[in-house]
Image 1 (cartoon, rainbow, N blue to C red):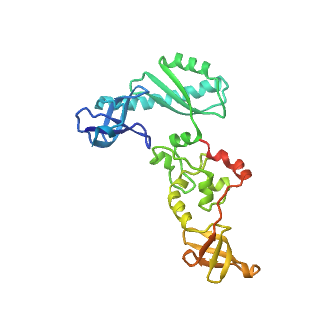
Image 2 (cartoon, rainbow, N blue to C red):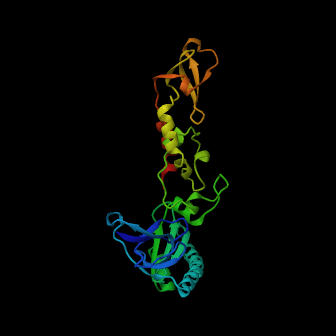
Image 3 (cartoon, rainbow, N blue to C red):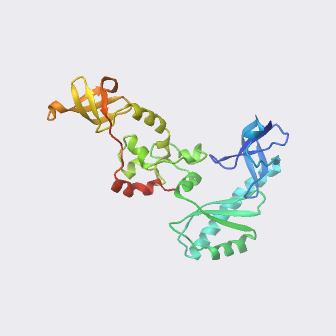
Length: 289
């Protein structure tokens, strides 16, 4: 058995686990730790938790120390340096006429590395830019190309629902979202209706997918043949949430379709929900990161 703590280095970022080294560290405290990027200061979002040895993530590094007032002053100073570094890098990008958009700048806690995050449509030759930045800042420079979803997570904003981006407020990791999910949830496959501000499929499509998947198991799909109290017919519309079906009866094909509860019909032959190939090719970019 051993204790671990969960540490986060940015708002809504991924949680990393560390050995508290015998310290009882409360949630909300800050700690100094060694990471792949270098020495960092992070917020404890999960206080000491006892786990069996086989459940402790490996390799598990220990904290260096609980952050002091001096450490927090260093963090604040780094935030100010990041703003200046952002402006300088933008000037250098313009000077080198590079097709890239700077998104964010991060100093490691010890100042031994500065990371510049950018987006671009393709590969960018930024070797001369790195040389310029290294000359200005006299430290290690890393340029990292990110996707539009990562850009939205870093910069934040308001979604079409009027609320702050989920990825910027509470989603630690991006969940896979597909065109098929939108189709199964009965959404109109219009890019403006199913994509977020980042231009990719809305993350919230994932939230209710399990519910829709369960409902689809017990609900005839559009095109299914069912037996109703009034005879056989084809399902022409489905409301998964209310459990209502609209059925065109075989014996009166020219008459208006009738509505039935799912519990009132018997399935004879089900249909499948398919995304048209041409439709998918048109929208598949929305699935990319």
